[in-house]
Length: 99
Figure 1 (tube, helix red, strand yellow):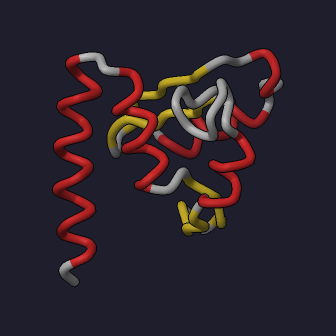
Figure 2 (spheres, rainbow, N blue to C red):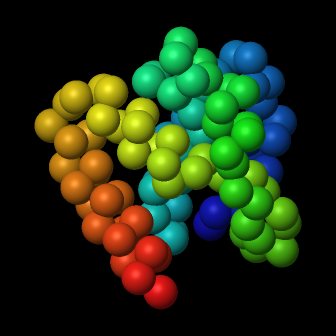
């Protein structure tokens, strides 16, 4: 269950994690300690924070990485799985724009 996993995450020190990838009942959930290709250097927290969106998740307000920053980061990685994800993310962005 997702809420159980989130409770576990809150007890961990963020500084002790690089990236945390969880598989939940609702799909994958990634907590990223570094975002390659975002903000002009490893980490990019200022850019990610400035562009983050606030959403409600299970009754809690949380900030999530913007679609533009996620696309930029995945493009920079250049792995096959990331380039495939970029195509999917671009299609999502087009759908959102056409609403």
